[in-house]
Length: 337
Ligand code: UT7
Image 1 (cartoon, rainbow, N blue to C red):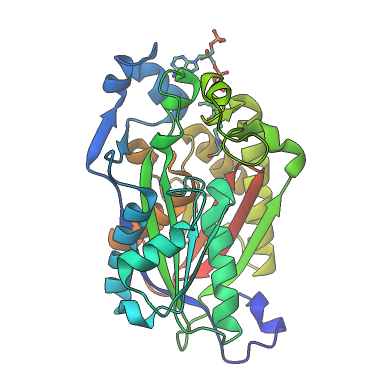
Image 2 (cartoon, rainbow, N blue to C red):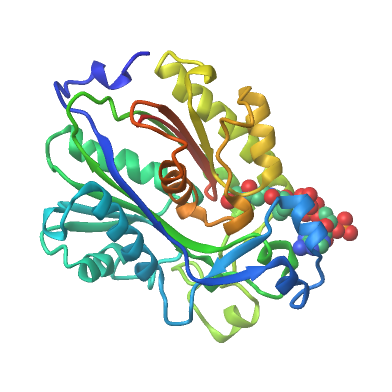
């Protein structure tokens, strides 16, 4: 295995994940519950997506609350206190509000008074984008401890009358503490990509400078998430496979060296198609989609936490994260755990 970072001048410096944590809201919305809300069936949802249930945040529970709870768990695992955090990066497309950033609200909730804080928006690919950004600060010795969180309250932008989308999404958060660790390669490489020409496939048109909230924009449903599912599906499989292959190529490894593949949890059929084209075995693929649905930026972060705490990953194992989302955006990362 090759460490692609070695070509840079980060002598003696690596970026490892020293703690992970996740949090999902208590309320469970099952497929049976959805049958009472829209014209759908457990059979359709299960066979077309693999999702059985998803978590829904309470009315007074926001993205920053989910993020702070996940962060506290990651900090506990890493043995890090709030005053040690130098930087907080939150990946989300459902911030508490347009500004201030959700990262600033999380900083307040954690009491991480020393930390700089900002959000990044790369939709469902956000966690890998945030990991890659965070690790640059560690490798360059700018910071010692970076908190990265993928957090979403997607239930706040889902049209609960649209069966094409409302069955797919859920709320939750996953967090990681990034630090240099001796004798570990840590995050070996992260591939990031985007194609703005396909921005319209998956978007929420209202609420920004192009379409501020008006009575008309609300009446037209422009503040809800909308998606061309079929086209998104095709693009997802192609982009995830090529990003994953590029990440492994950079490390000069093949899929047999990977202990655990953690794909974005959007659709079981996407995961199956990606797994098949990467020649990953079912044992290598980590799947928790049936429990949470698509939690966007939180998706691989929650899955990573569950894979670690279920004992599926041990220190020294190689992990492949691979993501895809609106933008379009995509990414893949190889991590020595
Ligand atoms: O996280 C970002 C990335 N997101 C994704 O990657 C999602 C990608 N797309 C998908 O996962 C799939 O395209 C969906 C799960 C969204 C849809 O599956 P599909 O196999 O592409 O179905 P479809 O959209 O072509 O719809 C097939 C039929 C349609 O009926 P007609 O027109 O054939 O009569 C839909 O109206 O299924 C109907 N349908 C439903 N029926 C029952 C759509 N949603 C539902 C539903 N329950 N919830």
